[in-house]
Length: 202
Figure (cartoon, rainbow, N blue to C red):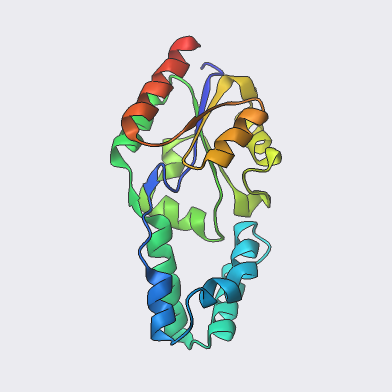
């Protein structure tokens, strides 16, 4: 198989994740000023994104900081995961499936503890690509250069042979700074065209 490689982000690329307004609804329900949930939970969200706490600890902190009982915590976290997981970008996922065997395929995602299990159950990304690198498993988030290096290492490919696709401009710029080719995801048509150009050039 060629060393040519395409690496995808998940949220906003392979998953469509529009805001659902769940945080605002909880603030209204709890009679909290706007922004309170993220203010109280910010360090927990960060810790979960780099895997320094587990899901049980997240639930305990949600209960303590927002004064929620057990069933409310479960409901709160269900709302979080509904927005996080979004819906599948079926057209792009189908295209990635057609690329298997033509190039190396990977995922590099800023994530949250528990994401692998849920995304595997819903979307089977583990069957779509060869390697998935989650920030909560390596302890590093994009746009840190080390995240891109970890993705290339996991696939045993050189950065210059990789096309990285993300919907966040700063991550795209960081990937280029790490020596990769990169594309800002805006829609499927342009992304599929860019992948074709990358494979054609190789």
